[in-house]
Image (tube, rainbow, N blue to C red; front, side, top):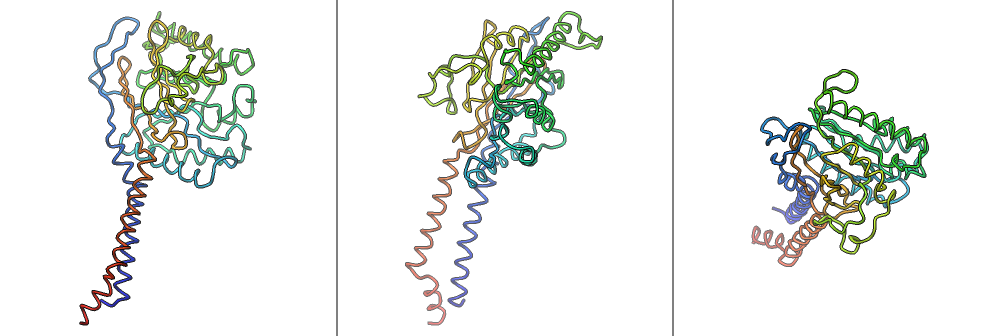
Length: 381
């Protein structure tokens, strides 16, 4: 082997090592981490209007729940920050589609970081990026609710912003879904300000219609229009958490930092108003509530029935070093929920640092011992 060919081979080995390091950190690591997550076993029974169900042993609905992806716009965030975070979210989501094959995916608001400010052309670009990065297989249904970054807080929303999001993302103010016998009520949190504005009035009227259907189902076994249905307590999906004073009782590695846990939450900004929250709890009597918005995980319980609310942390590394999503196994009479953590950004960065360091040490050893010169000398000497 000539000296030139030896050096060329060495440089090729360095290049291959860097490519393998890149492939590991940008593809393989997502499989290694997400394969650890499994759909939970159904162990939790709930009370129905007539009986208490036993543990379900048949087919269950596989529900994936995430929140606050915050696709960046043109105003805030460095271009590399945008490229990096969105690649991480896309790989995590698409790997989850392949590995876990959910039946339904719910994304609880703040799909976009600058949806409240952008023009119609930029909003369309946002929507196209979202559909590309969060595409689902044909058999998997995807539903979203609006967040304040998608159209603004209550005071900043106009009909155009509201209708634009609703049209492109199929997300009305209030939506009732019945999937495999499970009732889901999706709410636009900003429409429940309680100030009797036209948007709020429309949302409350639509919610009252759903409440009426549930009452008919409980009493008569139909949907108030003669169609036979079986009543099951609904599951609420929304962006804002229900009213709570603080995150003081929230725990976990992805919960609020200790210096934020005891900060008082501001109603209509950090969470829903107490009165609206009570109305949702007392009139819908949900078996579960899911929310986002705070970017931190929390499991809390409301009212005498101890209705559980899961606040889902941000799916983006821009807000959490350890993002996660929820995996729920669900039947009309039972559920179980587990949390699936994504790779930590710090671990990925460390892998890059150590990998590059090892390659660099290998390069220094090559320079120090002059391997190619030795091989050449051995060949001709």
